[in-house]
Image (cartoon, rainbow, N blue to C red; front, side, top):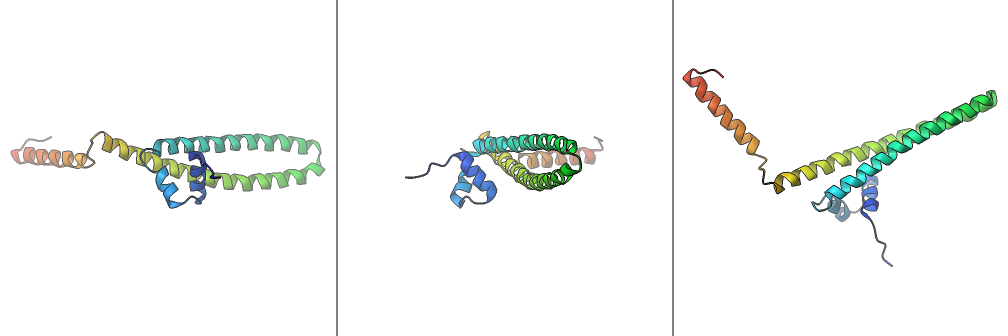
Length: 144
């Protein structure tokens, strides 16, 4: 039986570096890039929720440990160390997500530019034309 993989599965594997080249290229294709970006935004929101929930849980645990006095201190310090380790890993994962979001945005923008018929060299041509006009005005003695 063939396993059906969703875009979320492939996007998650892409973040882990475990999807194949065809899947990675598919995510970055024109017809999928917007959906890929949407998945990534959802992943980022999930990580941010986890940060908030775990921080709140740690605060609650700290209060419980403080009520136990000295006996709770060691439990809290161990939990705090575990939390900091998780936080570092989750922060790294969030950075990977943000990099992929930027990559997806760039792909979407490039597709949008080509779909709307805008030429990426248009800005260069306009700047050149403005420079020629400024040079012509300067040679006539007119200041801008």
